[in-house]
Image 1 (cartoon, rainbow, N blue to C red):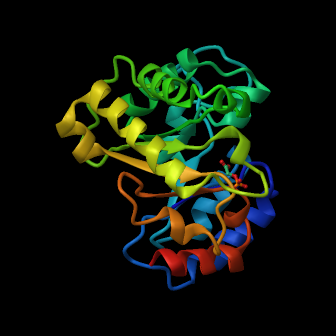
Image 2: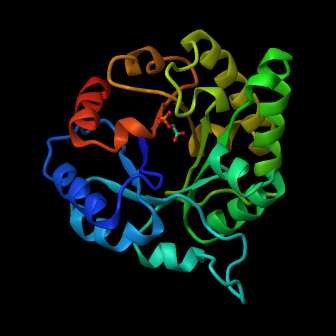
Image 3: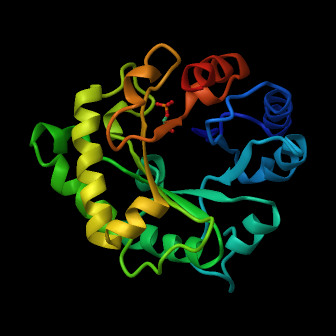
Length: 247
Ligand code: PGA
């Protein structure tokens, strides 16, 4: 489970949410990653303490160092204890015109410096209406992973299939459709990395309007290994209820 807190929580709120989560009995069978905003990383890290929750960030800059005002370096994320980083979320592709080439640079930086990227891919509503979603999504995966060195021990590549029209929406995508697209993502991973690395170092998750009442329909499906949550991860009761279903 990946929780994307976006910029929904101020640092003090993120701190409190992490403190509340850290004392819950959470399912041991589930890896739980929470991704606060950069400004909350340090506080959240401290509130997670020695709990099983894993820290992730919502983005990273595509260069390791240099003169880049306002950017956040991969080394900083490592120093804050992050193990995962969300890349290419549709909101960044929309807000700052992030391209597949930039997502690829960020992916290389993340893998090169010990982070596990969570690469978001997904078609727009128009692309789905034109029935070109499989090509769009396969291309996004291949471009994001272009020239990627093999992940090292303990590292993985997570692909989050998030159709843009289902993110922050009323309804998620149909589970059958998600399964079809997860198979497309799986094949693109095999094309990019080969069978062995795909089996050993990748997971596919679904994101877009997942809540406690619909999460069950997305898990235990072929090629779907978990979920990426926005709203449902930003409230302790909702998140704990959802995790109970996963556990
Ligand atoms: P949502 O957001 O769960 O609120 O739809 C999902 C996401 O951040 O991708």
